[in-house]
Every structure is written in C-alpha cells, then in structure tokens.
Image 1 (cartoon, rainbow, N blue to C red):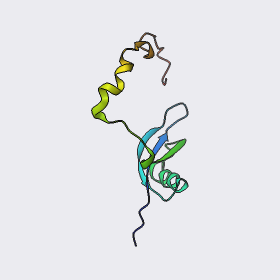
Image 2: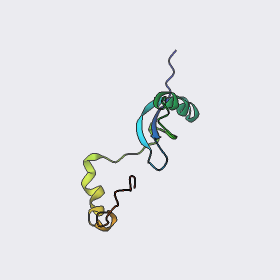
Image 3: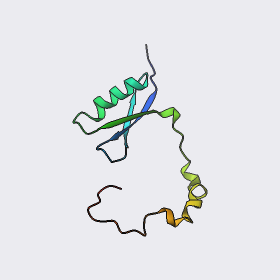
Image 4: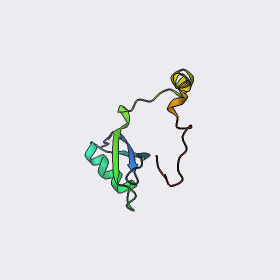
Length: 94
C-alpha cells in the first residue's frame, strides 16, 4: 500500500531579525506534521528560531522566460533601491 503525501517546501529563520530561507522539502499529510518533519530534518542542531511550511502545490512562480517584461517596470524606479545611502559598518542586517 502506497500513501502519497503532499510535498511541503520548508523555510527556516536562523536568528531573530533575519529573513526565512528555503532549506528543502518534506512530505507530510498535513501542515502540523510537515512542521514536525522539518524540525527533525532541518533544525537538529538548534539552527532555527522559526519554521514555515508551504504546500508546494500552493506556490505560484513566475516563468524565468518572461523575466524581461515582468521586471521591466521596476528598472525605471531607481529610487526604490538603497544605493544612494551610506550604510554604517556596524549594521549587519538590513
């Protein structure tokens, strides 16, 4: 008997103040079990402070082939990029 559990994408935040990073995938019947599998698999050495689990089927992604038309409007808005501000050396994470 084969049970096909859905695939879950796992994101872990290493420390407070940092963003979550994709670390891998697990298969689980529900979100609670996906978090438990993720904890056991990706944070065995206390690497994380927060775990997100998102069902792979629910993630929508853009097509890399349409990169130009999709991101072109942002290129003309250079004021949105923090390239004009000096950042002190003491600042580690923005």
